[in-house]
Structures are given as C-alpha cells and as structure tokens.
Image 1: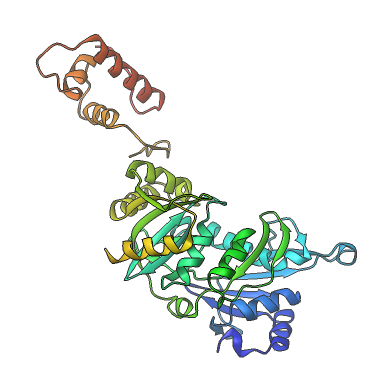
Image 2: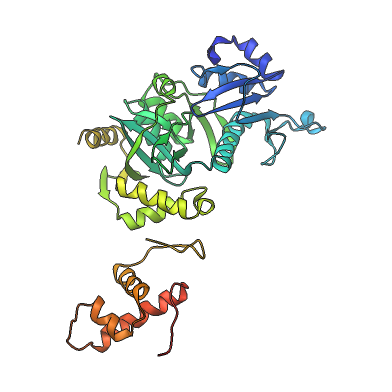
Length: 302
Length: 72
C-alpha cells in the first residue's frame, strides 16, 4: 500500500487524526498534520512511497500543527514538532509544507550519526554515485533535478548518507527542493515532472518541491558506492567546464559540508579520507543544463 | 591531511610541513637537519633562505599545537 492508495479526503483525514507512517528509504516517519497543504503535497509528491501499518515503529514522530493560541486566527502559523520537541520558530501557515521538509532534513542531519551526513545531493548511474556538495545558491538542486529527469537515480537532493565501514551511500530519496528561478527552469526543462505548489516569502525565497522519479523511489533500498565528488557552480553565461579539484582541498570542503564531522571525531576523519581516496574530485561551472547533462553522461560512461 | 586526536582539529598541511612533522614524529631534529632532509640539500650546506622557510614552518606547527620546541 502506497500513499497514493488514499484518496485525497482519506489522506487528509488520516493526517488530521492518527497520522500516517511513510517509509522513506532507510527510515519510517510518522506524520500528523491538519493542514490541507500538507495532505495535498504528500499525496502529490509522496504518491509512490510505501505506507507502514499504523502501529509500526517509526524513526521519527513528527507533526506540523497550528499553535494553540489566538494567532491561529489572526496570523495563522505552523509549528514543526518531533516527539513533541520544537526545533524551529513557527512559520506562516502557508509555509507548512516546506517546514515539514526542512524538519525532516533536521531530523536526519541531527540524529543519523551512524552515517557521515554530508550536505550535498547524490545521484547514481551504472552503480557509481555522484556527490554534489555545495552551499545554497550554487545551482546544486537545479542540476540534481535535471540529472534525475535524465536517467540518473536520485538518492537525495540534500543529504548524502555515507556508511563509515562500507562507504556505501544509503538513499534518502525525497522530493527535490527548488528555489526561485530554478522552479521555472526545471518546469521548462522537463514538462512531465510534478512540482508542488510554490510557497512564497520563505527564508529561501519562493520554494517548490519536485516529485522524485518513481524508479528512484522504488530503488530506495539499494545503496551505491561513491565515485565522483563534484562541486557545482551555476554562473550566468558560463561555459560548461569540469576541472579537477585538488584532493586536499576537496577533503576540507567535504569536512566543512558535513553535519556530524566533529561529532564522529577520528571516525569522521577516516570516513572522509576514504571517501576522497575513492572519488575523482572536480569543480563544475555551468549555465546550460543540456550541456551539463551531456557532460555527466560522458563522465558516467568513462 | 592530519587529524589531531588531542584537539579534534583537522589540518591541511603542505607537503613540506607534512614531511617535517613526520620527521619530528620519528625523532627530535635541529632546523639544519630538517632543512637537509626536506629540501634535499644532502651534505651540502644549508642556506639562510632554506632555514628561514624551515623556521616559518616550525613556527606554524608550534602555533597549531602539533610540535613543541625543546632545548638540547
């Protein structure tokens, strides 16, 4: 049974009452929310995800609800909770769905310490994983979304989970977060993709989420071994350019982009060392997605 | 790359710094001995420029808390 097994009213009712247990790759999340926008987005963007039985174990119990005070009438807000803990300040109610996605990222990046948790997108082709670590505004999610619509398997657009002992990357395949101009760029690039309604005036500007390809969701239990680390940078009018990045510097950039590097101590150092050893490292400048796709196809076929 | 288990810090060292640290890990050395090993000057004399470079590297490694100066 998948999320799409529910009709829209059924899903909204379940979310409002007992919540739903959704299997997302390596973990199960129990979600409760009365917000219609959450029900709408989950039904659209999580349609392919398996549902677990109501009494199942859940790694995270999360909710997005309005506050229980007068504000719910004057300036409606949404509050994210995990196990009744509130990690963020409330946001305007029309940002309820992005808040859920950001909250899930927070859950994983602060609690999945059995993995090295790198802030970066990760995709796979021919059994080899491509890691795209980059700060916001670098064009990482746009590139990730485009590659995912052109035959690359999406493992995550945000968090790369590396197992220290085996170096396997565990998928955490969820909708791709698109911001501002990227939303229209991806809509034009691949018209068949489903993109949820945009949320405006968030801390990241306008945000909308792209549905992960069904094939990627269905292979969410398959790990992949890292082969490339590419630091992308979107530059208007830039020629498509892939250049080698020195491994020492790549190490430091990965360490800086890892949520739990310090927490893992020597184990974190060893894991990043192994990751760098086994990957070819590059800088990548681009402005044309079609050229980018061709370049990465060639890279995967080498 | 170097991980300092005492501080939890990670250091990105130049090849020369890494070589000096490795030599000092094996045994204490003078700046002249280090210059001869690191700069491949063999039995020939070590010039002032080389010693200045070694001194700068040693000062940086001291600053990072990776080595300390001892009297002999």
